Length: 379
Ligand code: GDP
Ligand code: MN
Image 1 (tube, rainbow, N blue to C red):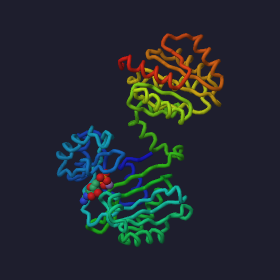
Image 2 (cartoon, protein in one colour):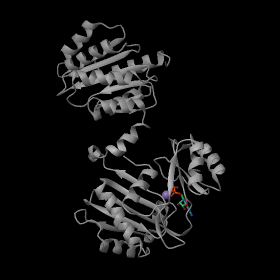
Image 3 (cartoon, rainbow, N blue to C red):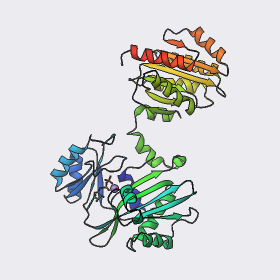
Image 4 (cartoon, rainbow, N blue to C red):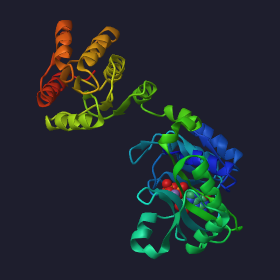
């Protein structure tokens, strides 16, 4: 999970890294009040989990609280690379003397971290790396040793950063290791005209394997997620919302992905990706169906299960249980194969719901689901 800039800033501050004074707002009026508290002149920054906000109009200087309100009003609701701006951060403007790039990233193939640093920060680091590779240094970091003050000094010297940046580099390593992050990036890290080293921007990616230790961030996250994705997560389902009409449920990521392809091959667009997993029970099937049916853009649903550990009769029981719990208003095409498929099919036949059809092959099921999706108007 990526953190928002303002969350990364909050973490940096907790670890003693200097950051600009800042506040967040989700309305233009609040933005004005924040600007007043911050001294009037502020930088207004769109809070979206993507880079290059500056170039996309998501970082603007406002001369006074009225201008901050106006800028926030323009920014809120704006789309930056597919991300809607719901929050802005107001930050005190900093007079910078020079801008640097620093990050720690996991190097999976080498089984260690890499410190990446450049004295040419602020701009697009990929561009610097491509055009002037010698200006970007990479220093391996052994995770068992970490970034000691000596290591931090070595990184700073290699990248020709000012000596004072070493303390920040050591602090950023503490953020990475103590907060279970896989990436910590600051671009730009700046030296101000008064000689302080400040993090003007921050990106932190937390390791999802440590999510049980990240309640603080996860709680804030759900407020902005797709509500069905949040509901599915609560039930432990792997559900991803897509933008088509055919709801798709399968067992195993590989089968679900190929089902998406086959549905697309039949000229329809998948509405979601829902993997009920390898050992799915009737309850999991019922929960999954409830989530997919709750999506108003779904006009037909395809359940594609290849029974292995999961028995198809349990899947059929789950579908039947779901038919009791939610009123089915959309056609459902079911393809059961593998473990206990015959028993599963017989159970569904016996239930004889007018909106439930069975198909024996994946291709046949996808074709039928696509036809039904086109026949029905979206709710
Ligand atoms: P990004 O475009 O998403 O990386 O957003 P940044 O937070 O990095 O802002 C873009 C650029 O705006 C930075 O690289 C800085 O050059 C500049 N910038 C942002 N805030 C300030 C500030 O307070 N003072 C100065 N001088 N420049 C700023
Ligand atoms: Mn930046």
